[in-house]
Image (tube, rainbow, N blue to C red; front, top):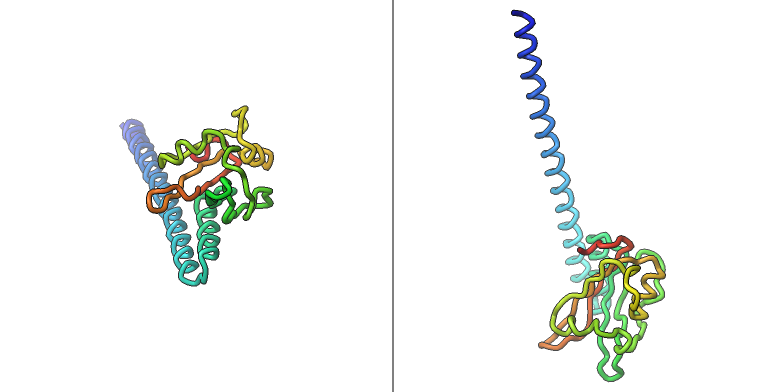
Length: 178
């Protein structure tokens, strides 16, 4: 009889331990999500502070790109504007972890982007999950690939119904933005 009670109690304790382990795991995951959210809120507060302290559009964009890059944990964030007079895309600002040859002020003819601007002009993002898998990349993306970047997300920027530029993020991890 004692052996039966010990065996029953052992089963109960094992089930209780399993429940506690599940609860502990769920709690740790919740704490991690809360910490991630706190980091995002901190970054947004820093962006707000930087915007309020900035004295020019360039400084506002620079501060925002820096914090967005850190918030999303990607390697490169950039704003490019379309110069309709010269039919070029001009790098307005770039924030990257490390050096980049496609920096602020870089001018690239629109025609070198091929069909990429079609979806952007329709307010659709362009997502490239792996730059290494595409054979006919525009020169800008070939350069990014040589710099070790593998995935990129390009979003159109519009003003008064017209596309004025792009906001892009890039990562060395394939499929990062998927």
